[in-house]
Image (tube, rainbow, N blue to C red; front, side, top):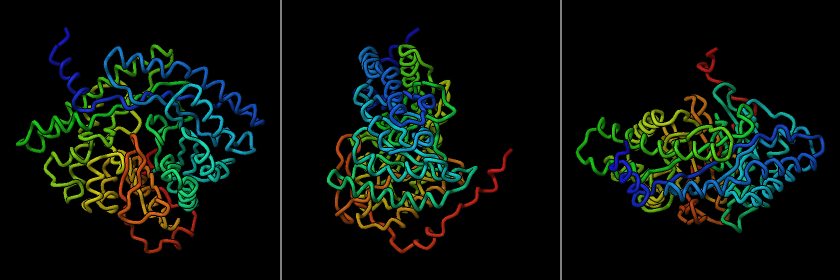
Length: 451
């Protein structure tokens, strides 16, 4: 029997607390599109994406209208393109142009998978594709890219780390006239998940079905509102409230995912129950931490509060969905979170504190603007630090750094929309160049030997 209180609560969460389905992402395998001729391969890719995803946007809009749930983005993720490029050779940016054309034809917001997995070394096609990323992202609007440089099982590929520092700089330089947006569409991972529905890091892993629907939910405002009703609760009470709220949020994601999969005739994959913030007032992970009792995000105690939040979100979410995956937890993207932006502007939140927080959140250093003259070796060293946190802790870490070309500390970088804006944050620029230049591979930690 339907409980009218539950219905009214859901309506309130949507209308007043910024609850939404952040994305319906269709994952599509392109392995059967590999060809020794790049033109034939690209034609196969375009045809397959258009065939499978032609109704994705319409179905998402229909579900949103029928259930009254905002569905913000409809996206596609594909097999890492480096796998296809290994067979064809030629100019890898032809694949990026094909993905862009397909994204426009099916009208999705973004398409992810211009990617390479190089945690243990470069296979055929990997390095050439990585070197093409700046040009590919400069030429396209909807294509997103990712590179996995490390894992708990493999260690960290330091040759890839050194290369990616240079690639990030080049992405920013090639799009300097567009707020360095190229770097904002590139994610560098350790322990990248194969079923992540969130951009810019989404790709369709080799172990995934031919086609699948993954859904990413969001609801920082809902969690903050729940905690605001408990001004005198102890920490256990806070954790219980977050778990109960995460359960409710995830049930909505499960409903949308099941409906989308049924109507599109493809399997349901996972619900990613991450708290993904936006620049909208109240829709902030930082504000949740402050509701727990911190004067401002970045104060001592922030890492502990974030650990509590991340764990409680996962515990509540896994009870609500038959399949939870992706990243699942709390995102802390600086430019996309109104509370994080305010804390960074005031100096309460530093890059060092953010790094500590990434040890317990669901991603890593995300959407952080850094001075435009930051050397590539410093960018690489930040990647190495984050990959080390992910490798040792058997968790996903991801980095999106945006060198703000022509800007310095305290200046603002404005993206607009969900990407928001943020201050250029200071970095420790003492040189790690010799360490990065050594190359090689950081060995996997001893606890990776679990077989």
